[in-house]
Length: 122
Image (cartoon, rainbow, N blue to C red; front, side):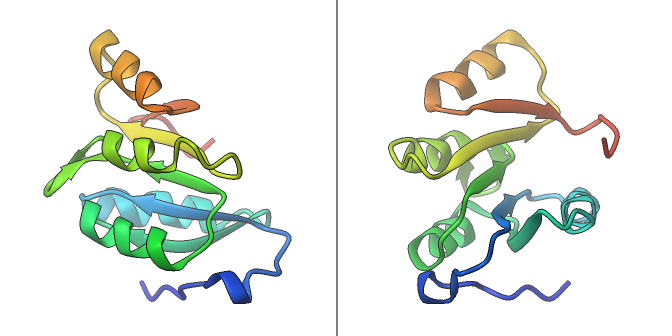
């Protein structure tokens, strides 16, 4: 799936710009497809690592960070902490971990919402 990186100077759209961070390619493609199916959203990038997400965050303007917690090179909570103090960005977690420890940890990092991967497209 080819993605176009929207830089701050290009950001004149009325869409909510989303960065998706998910290491499992099948799940990433499924979620990217769902997000792309809504005209209110613009998928800025769908990446699989913390390093790739950091690069996008350095170079693009987003409204929503949708991140997995367990990444091959780090933890999505660190990405959430990175954007926590930027009022224009909402951080949401997508994960298979529904236990209290993971939920509380994500909320403490600054997540505004928590989505389980096994949920449907709705």
